Length: 70
View 1 (cartoon, rainbow, N blue to C red):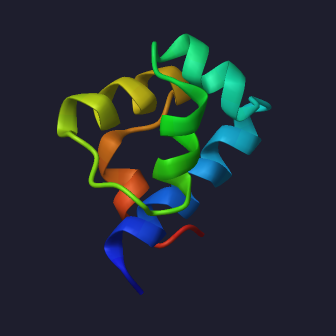
View 2 (spheres, rainbow, N blue to C red):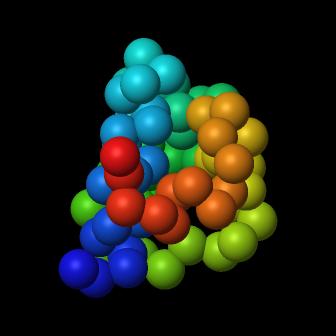
View 3 (cartoon, rainbow, N blue to C red):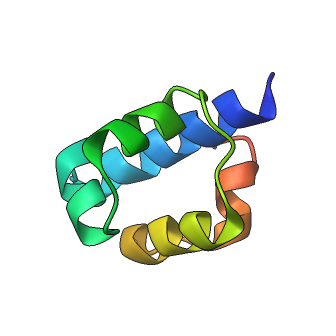
């Protein structure tokens, strides 16, 4: 599976577990809604600092978004 697609799917799953919409995550991470959508669809390569900010908002350790979701 493509790394970006897997990453996006994991971010989506953790976002939903937290009960956040894309809009809520974008607001809390100071990003645009379309940027979050592009990340979740695996369309863009995301800078590490942005991933760290998203993980901080979602309260998940950075390495976990790269692992297969269990």
